[in-house]
Image 1 (cartoon, rainbow, N blue to C red):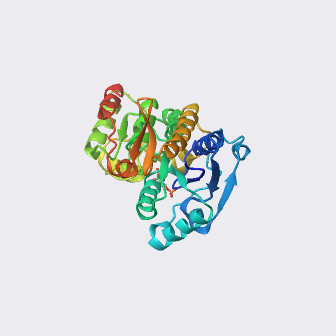
Image 2 (image 1 turned 135 degrees about the horizontal axis):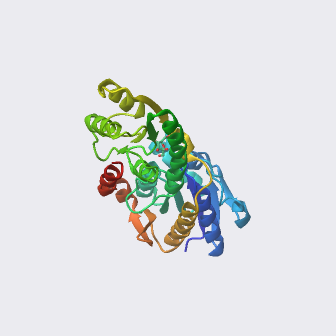
Image 3 (image 1 turned 60 degrees about the vertical axis):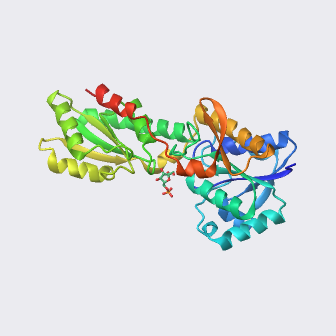
Length: 325
Ligand code: F6P
């Protein structure tokens, strides 16, 4: 019987992480399990920044972006020595199980830690990138898409007023999910994603054709991990070869996509996954991530969430081309 668990957030923060922490703490309290918070991810585990949480510790946080537990990408936890220290701190505090809220790096760490020290961990996917196999959506993705969309809508106003082409760079690391979703919703002429090569020649052609049909402004969304480079590099290549007089600007949205009030979708997702993580630990799950696929809770081994690809729906890229005619 598990009667003491700890929760932490790690890696890049994502809107909805607080809603997930709240769900973990409240679910544990509901089931009569003592629950501890660990500050700054694996760094706090190593230094012993571990404190008891009660139901009221998570009052009034469901609507807040960021993470009250703070986050970090820990270099020390990548060493055996660091993990040994973390294990000792957990033992000193009597922690029997972990809920890890984060992405790829977080689950890689949790997986190695379990293999070495046998501390069971269940993950909740918290990253704006939506790049984890084993869940349709990750916590924070929907909010990030809506934040990007809000910016795209605003850029469209000025693009239209000045008859300009804008290359807008969105986050996502090696994944094109934020780009494709915000691009479709923002009516972009083209979306460039790492998963599918859109050659510069094709971008040039689409823009030229648009101009010949009297389009006076265009939006191209570039995922930060695109093979052709970041938005500034893509824009430079286009300038050098387009051969018509168009005014090009570049906007990199950056970390605004990581902050802000989580959407209802993200809060609900985070609440469900926080509860599922606690119930998973209670039911004997270990080394797995709780996810939601087709509205059902599923548990997927950490190793698969990291290793297996999560392809984007290429039909959506086809649709962007058709609808931008
Ligand atoms: O994983 C989330 C993310 O925001 C990625 O989209 C991006 O590539 C990266 O983190 C940025 O990391 P940092 O905040 O450490 O610069």
